[in-house]
Structures are given as C-alpha cells and as structure tokens.
Length: 356
Image (cartoon, rainbow, N blue to C red):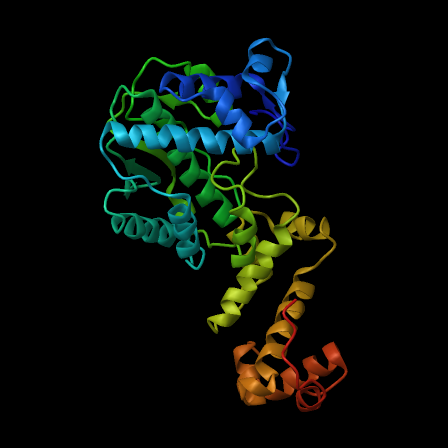
C-alpha cells in the first residue's frame, strides 16, 4: 500500500477487501458461498466474517477479484440494458496498443478501438491543457449503482495501470474522479486502489503530467502475453515490474532498428526514462548488463534473422538496417560476435534462425 517500497509489493491482501466484494455480490442476489466454491478457494465467507483469515494471498485474491468484478460489471450493464465488454475484448485492446510508439498514441488507439465496440466499452477521450493531461472514461452507468461504481473504478484503474506499465514508469495522479455517487465505504476503496477517490463527478477521469504523453512504449509483445494472465485484475503489482529495466531498454533498441531509426545515445536513453545518466547506468548494472551489451545482443539477433538464407537480403542491406555506417564496419562487428564473416555464417547456418 502507500508508503511501501515499490520494489517489494505487499504479499497478500487484507481480508476486508475480499469481504467487501462478496457483500456487494450478495447485494445483487448472487450467492457468495457458491462463487467461492466455484473458484476452489481454500476459505469461506464465514472465515472472513469471523476474522479467521486476516490476509488472502495475491494469487487467490486475483482470482476472487476477477470473478467478483465480472459479476458486478454484468449486473451494472443489465441495469442500463448495455451489452458487456468481454475479457477477450480487453485483451484485444491491449494487443492493439502494444505496437504504439508513445503513450499519446496508445490513448488514441484505445479510444478508436473502444469506439468500434458499439457501447460495450466506455467512450475514451484525452484533454491536454498546458502541462496537464486529463484522461476521460465516460460510461452509461446509473449514478447511484454500487455495481456501476466498482465497475467504473476498476476500469479507470485498469487504464491507469496499463498506461504506466506500457511506458515502464509510474504515472502519478492526484485522484480518481468517478461519475457514480452511492453511499459506500470509500476509505476501503481508497486503501485498495491506492488513490484518493472523489464521487459524483461529471464523468470518470484522472489527470497526469502532459509530458508523459511523449514517453515511448517500452514493453514487448511477449511480455504482454505473460501479463494478460492476470491483467486487468492485478492491482498489487507495480507498473514498472522491478527487475525488467534492461528488457525495456532492449525493446526500444529493437523497435528503433526495425523502423530503421538511429539508436538513442546514453544521454537520450536516460532522458527517455526521466533519469540521470548515472542512475540509468546504475539501473542496468543492477541487472548485470551494460547498454553496449544490450545493443550488441539485439543487433546480433536481428543480424542472424536477416542473414538467414530464406530472407534473401544482401549483406550490405543487413548492415544498413542494423545502423552501421558501412558494410565493412558490420563485417568487423559480426566477426567479433560470432567468429565468422556474414557469408560464412550463412553457409554454416542453413536452418531456421533461432527464436530465443
């Protein structure tokens, strides 16, 4: 929760959060006992009420939270006769934005994706006023619906955490503004979502620094596939994902080379992550790697893919795509990496290029 070291996220969730969700599920006519039994969780609602469990494991809570929010969302949609947005559609939205270059492009593509879902998703928009950006998520929930409140709060938090995860850094916001305004235990919600919450607003939104809109997307497709096993229900995970700083740097290099763009300098890389040069280098040292080593690893992997006989690409073209000034520089580097010239490597490796 607030004040804890972001490198060491809390292990377990207070049972009160789970009890609050189950009480709301019961309020709309669903049986909490049946819901818990269907998930195969090793506790009952009675255990929570009696205080026999103070903490629920992260894994079990993600399961419970996902099921409860799904149930509450379906109810909130029925209240307004709205079709639901499925988990598959949420996943597809994530797949659509992973190839964006910047956070601003992510938000615009998410807006366009949701606009195609015929009211199964919220209407997204972005306002930029000077140094402040405001992300809006307009829905058609009933203002006094607790199910609607929890559904919209989960949605707003989902976008906040998705955006932060994509750019590899936290996005500070002052609060979550919610359209709904029913009487709820707001303190419990604020402790869980780790943000101040204001109810009864014109729509659902949060504000953040407009400078973050230019931040590049630093996550890979493969990392997204892994993330979607728990997204959007993993509220305890930090967006940065400690221990994966080098991966974010590698993704930027890979993307720039694929687009045949020049690679950032050390100072430019540090600026991308809003770090000093010294701090950027220290973060890489913590993962036992250097910027030059990452560049060489990415270039070698791409070189092997482009040099594969099936690609039918000239060595001079490979050199150009990898950002070398001329083919001789590329040949020297490739011999240093592999011990072979590019032509020798082609003759030795006629099989499918490695995928690791």
